[in-house]
Length: 81
Length: 296
Image (cartoon, rainbow over all chains, first blue to last red; front, side, top):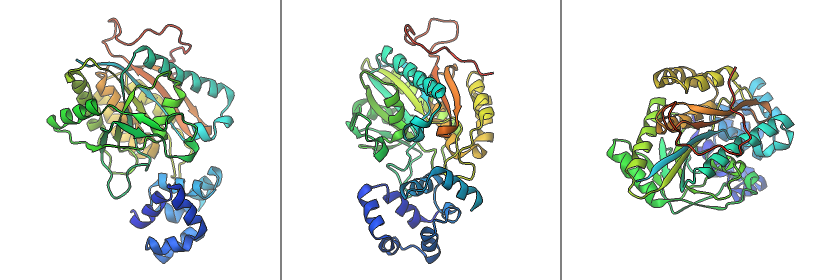
């Protein structure tokens, strides 16, 4: 199951200027992309498995790479939650 | 009349750039040699146009619209958008609008309906192989994006048939263009899934073996295995396009090595363009340094 707006957010964050804005004010993007509260919480908590059920795996990896999570930690969270 | 002068496959993966320094030296040497070998063969083939069969890693298409197949018909395409590909030497990559347009029309006449784009961003899937091949001269690039990233995917049979369409379209093109094909991606890998990092060496070797046999066995194997083989493995679809274009005669394996540091089973191949035993249409191999590898 795909969450369209979450996917759209992760897709758009590939644009460096958008990513810079996101880093400056993440909460503003939550409104702009109409994200539901559980998704907002998952983003705030870097909840990899929760988000992984809602977006394409490549976009998921891109997002966590972009926010600075190293691959070993990302893989650990994928597997162990 | 145009002619197919080469068909190749090469793996790609972001970590081939981002983690290159961490790759063990012996694997670095083999990877470098394999890419260079394809570069040498492609240069010797004097290709005017290179059709690069590749996935789109979310550089162009979002959930708003994901074509099964998209052909780049523009005069030029953009270089890789990924910040970590900033040192790739080409920011603009010339296309071949006339040949690409012919390819689209030929496909439509055969009942194949690709999407078209007049300007694509060519991400690392295209540009890592082109970069590592160290080509002295970049041929004009006609991108053929085959969706292997976001389901549903075109069937493996359809991908093989696409190769036949490519072959016939090349033969039907009136100008004496030398066309080569590069399939990028695969072999086994898993990205952003619980199995991320896994390489299925057994599957890779079986695929390599089956590419030298009957296409039906290859298709049956892939239909069964791909859905559970790690999402990156779906890129073998691109190899099927090259396989179909080359007439399904199998390939010379340039190298295969699982590289845990880059989390990809890395495969490199050059298809046979003429029946086994006859004089090869592929370019001479003088000066190449890679010994053809046999899979144990």
